[in-house]
Amino acid sequence: MLTVACDTGPLHGPATGIARATAGLLDALAHHDVAVVPYVVSYRAQLEPGTRRLALPASLALRAWATFDRPRADRFVRDADLVHGTNYVVPPSSLPRVVSVYDCWALDRPDLVHADVRLAMRVLRRNIATGAVVHASSHATAERLRAHFPQADIEVIHLGSTPLPSPPAAPGLRLGELVGSRPFVLAMGTIEVRKNLPHLVRAFASANIVETLLVIAGGDGNDRPALDSALAELDPALRSRVVVTGRVDDGDASWLVHNARVLAYPSLDEGFGFPILEAFAAGVPVVASTAGSIPEVAGDAALLVDTHDTDQLAATITRAVTDDTDRTRLISAGRLRVGSFTWANTATHMLTLYRRVVADAVRP
Image 1 (cartoon, rainbow, N blue to C red):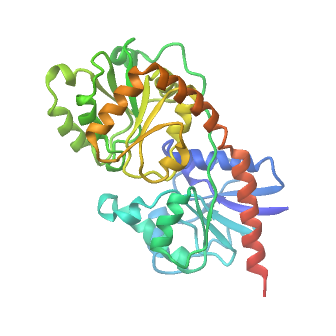
Image 2: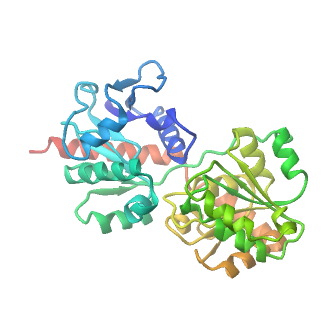
């Protein structure tokens, strides 16, 4: 049996896409002949029994690992055959290593990310330079990685789709007051530059859907000032039709996705795009950009538009909201498309990668 030390740190923070990727992989690996040794790099996280804590603060570890191959993880995971860093970073080790990379936004646009993320990218560069094998979640991400690291050993393994929990019959009280029973276009995700939400607001202002709301659901990020500026440009009647909910809980998130008229996903880059598959599974049409991995994941089951073309986005949202023929086709295609992305497939391919990396490490 193969034993893999796997970073479960993403499970101890906000419910991000990386947390969902980590949880989906671990759940699927449980059905295979592999033993997972969970580890975290944190002094503060409350850990499940059996999780190993690398005994140093994450910030200190990243600063060290960006420059040195110390401290190593070996004494904490010495019984493992391989170490898998699930969140862009894998600790130095004498064991073979795999590191998961979901998008290259921070490598391509370091000026638009937090200093801690830039530090993590320095560690990633050193990981690759010292022989870590890269798992890319899409071919689009692999292509960008090869532009940054031409000699890297990169394996593309798509992630799976986990349907949202069944939605409650009604949203929470606050969300119900904000949305009511009106039809709405939904955008889900942290309000960060990569999500391109000010562009979506401008497109919504031009769309011919006068009875429809725009609901933006997600926590504040580095693009909140730009979003507020875009909202301030709207006339009062139109501004009243844009609802910014802030972060929502799982129940409200599920209700929003299942009840949206359209999911709008105009991102400047995506490494995978879980919300697209969630909308497909819920029978909701998707309008998305052509950036990053989105065309790779959406296939012909979504309406795709140029990332920066406001008029095209407005017209396509109008079409997706009002054209019943298109809506029927998109809903059918989406439900078919989501079946292409299963965690069972992800785990099978990941286990093949683990075995190949371990075998390569022992060859003379």
